[in-house]
Length: 99
Image 1 (tube, rainbow, N blue to C red):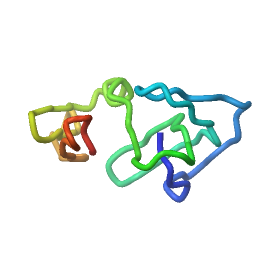
Image 2: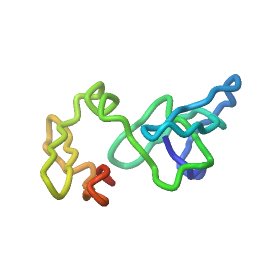
Image 3: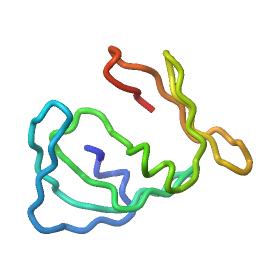
Image 4: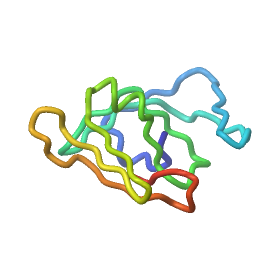
């Protein structure tokens, strides 16, 4: 889920859908699209205007077989074959990781 539409290479408007966050708040799904960067391709990414951070599903990373390593202070994502670093993030206020 992201809040920056400039990251999309393709985007469609789905039927009206709401997304519920971990704290129970409700957000409207504006669009769904594909993001392609130099390191990865993400399909079916939700575009949600109310988000303040871009979020990635750990399950989606596992679907693409990326290696994901967590520690008490950060997370690291790597390509499974080349072991090339794809992304890195840090813990934010012990509420989650920002990758």
